[in-house]
Amino acid sequence: MIHAQPTELQYYKMVVGKKGLKLKANPPGFVLPQGPKLESGGVLVVEIGSGKAVLHFYGATMGDLASFESRFSNRPVHDMTGLTGHYDFTMRPMDTSSSDMDGELTRFPIDELGLELKPGKYSGITLVIDHIEKPDAN
Image 1: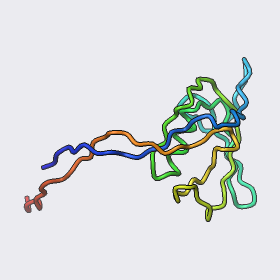
Image 2: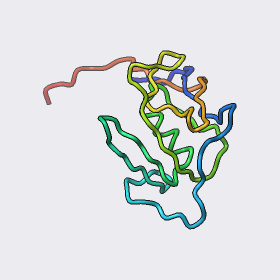
Image 3: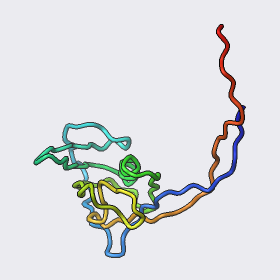
């Protein structure tokens, strides 16, 4: 048996930084290179050099970036930029021994893109297992 329990969950808000956006919007008629497709239809091209992956995003949305950043954080990242365009940008991993102000590792920093991650909280639900039985032999 399980039940739902209201809880407060933590996340990151991805917002435009104080110094402004540093992304290049796709020009009209831009042809995307070959590569794995992003959810928005953009493309991610990975370049491996000197043991580190450099990521080139083409035609990516801020939703694509928030989804990508969520994979490397122990909190989900929500796009709160209000930006609706498609952008080209490059991301380089930071030294894995570095960490952000909350002590959580953010492998691909976004400050070079003119974006910031700010901690936030929201109401959610946690499922709690009240009772579990061992299955019988059948």
